[in-house]
Image (cartoon, rainbow, N blue to C red):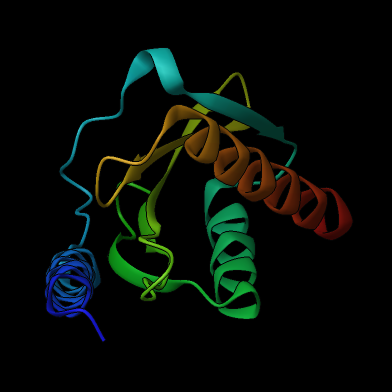
Length: 138
């Protein structure tokens, strides 16, 4: 084999491994601010405590890790597993009450500068799954 080819493949694998290590260790925190321009919201006719329990069940059933939880402020940060081919995302789920209705504000952040299309599709998949779970359980 050509030595240049072997060197190129080795460098590409090393870069991929470094990106994987960075994204696998990246975590979110409930003190992180949401990006107002990216927010999607879901309304639920249930208490924040009940909705928080539903969110946690959804996270466990969908394979998300819980990075951070603040039961008093009704905030949860979920982490999508990184793999060698997918860097994953961090999902912020912040609950608040408005006139007896619980509002679930959702935001997503890439672990490693992913394109906007992948971020949008990941957020839509997360939003639709969580919305369906909340609807089915309230």
